[in-house]
Image 1 (cartoon, rainbow, N blue to C red):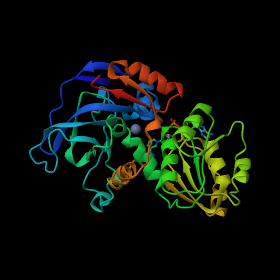
Image 2 (image 1 turned 180 degrees about the vertical axis):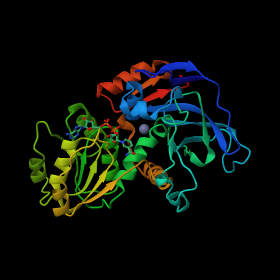
Image 3 (image 1 turned 120 degrees about the vertical axis):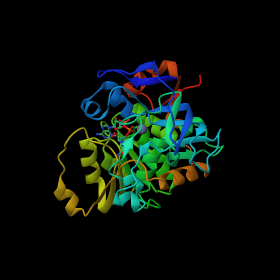
Length: 342
Ligand code: NAD
Ligand code: ZN
């Protein structure tokens, strides 16, 4: 089969042929239809310090996918051939206290497809049946291929009650934009999203009913005053990984505000802890998606009118993957989807 492989420990990915994976008795084989390119894949492409420490070579990359089941292991029940699906790319252990307590997303043994294990940028993917998420007919393969990052957005956004609240999102990358749409769907009063990239802010305003703020040219405090957000934002969703953005968020929060942190800073970054203490702010770190609560919530929201389709700005045939990666790297895209059947 064709697969996008991290074949050498240097910049790039290589389209190679690889054997179709053999499945175990608890697995399924998925024929991949569409995949999404993630920021993580860009790190792996660039072969930065994190990738060098984390990713074994050679490895089939990719973890955002939609496809259909073409083979089913002997022990698997409740799934059928031809079943359209996406799936959770975090492979968990079942021994830890967290797993045994039902908090699967907090299992410390978690391994990621396309990062630690063979991934989804391929014509076929082996996946434990446990990880499969069937797709209802009304969810297209395009949307199926971005449920993983939508899940990050949903997990973060639904961490705190948003109904009637003023929400600040820092970072209008694909995940920040989807979080804005989710916050609106969940009944937030004002949803303000910041970035330094005007193209992304324009995309945010197209995809969701939000107030975009370019912090290089606008003062967030002015926007707050205009929106009559008197004492500060109730909920903050940090989705940039940028130190300045987090500082600005803390500054803009109400006393007792709640912040969910998804963005990953590049290294250690200084935090003004006394500001957080005196403002009595609650901080929550977010990792991945709640398995499988986030999946249920996001599918239900899509079925109930949540529309994030506009965040997909580019589609390419798999053989044109280099174009897809270069548009992602340009910062001028939302989600980029590759078609494995084109
Ligand atoms: P992205 O890099 O596409 O988007 C980040 C955005 O932040 C960019 O548009 C950038 O211009 C913007 N930004 C930079 N400086 C800013 C500033 N000072 N103020 C406001 N915005 C600023 O990333 P993404 O794919 O949307 O993902 C969002 C973040 O979530 C990334 O940091 C990613 O690494 C992280 N992430 C975490 C998890 C997890 O499990 N915790 C999972 C997926 C992604
Ligand atoms: Zn991803």
